[in-house]
Image (cartoon, rainbow, N blue to C red; front, side, top):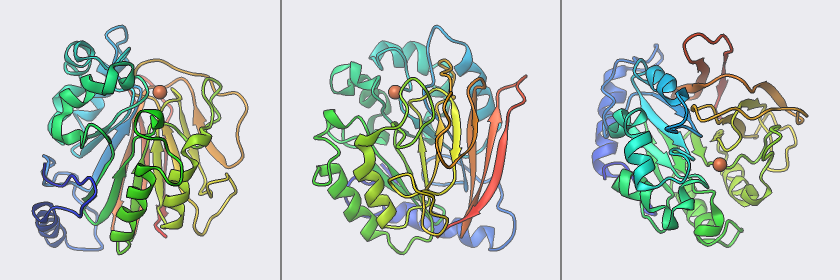
Length: 308
Ligand SMILES: [Fe+2]
């Protein structure tokens, strides 16, 4: 599929189209959000959330209505179709809501997808857009940004140790794209979370180490069903304003809410009772973020950062 890459470099078609977009948009001015957003022609806006659809919740209908108004790339952060990511869950629960954005969605699986052996419901639904079913990780370019979609359900794909296939692939992929000023990565399990149900995930530290070494800027995660924004940190959770990675937990896709109690160091903003999506506007050397709540809710969060 155009633009998707599981170990090689970016497709020439996607690159050519992104060049056309860059030329068409000019530089320095506000980027249009009206650009075509079908796969292969990327608008410089992404909208992301995880822990999304369930036939037992109407939260996903509400977050899907937000995506109707955001013309950009849709990122799912895993646990996309409860309870088991089965063929039936995707057909009956995901497809009627977030399914209408399928042609502009770059997904990753979560642990619930693997409650169906081999995450076959997930890979069968998204097909080539999900990458190699034995891996579930891939990368692509988005208007000058390098974007890495990772699979943090490590036990199903050979682990996430420093010598695991995924971490070795990630290091190679980041090396091949070291010319990118800005790098965005996403994985279902958050390295850091103040949530009380799952909290932080030590197992993904080697993924963070590779990203940090390569100067990655932003990591998006879900798993905890709440919203949290951290200041830039190193893989051990030490504040690092110069080289650190800014993490957002966006497990607000609509399934349910998990409480936040004890707040971790460097957590800047958190909310545990609002469904919504995180919108990122990607600039050549930085980004704007805005949490967009579902209709009737007031919580929001916004700001801007420069890339390293
Ligand atoms: Fe999860």
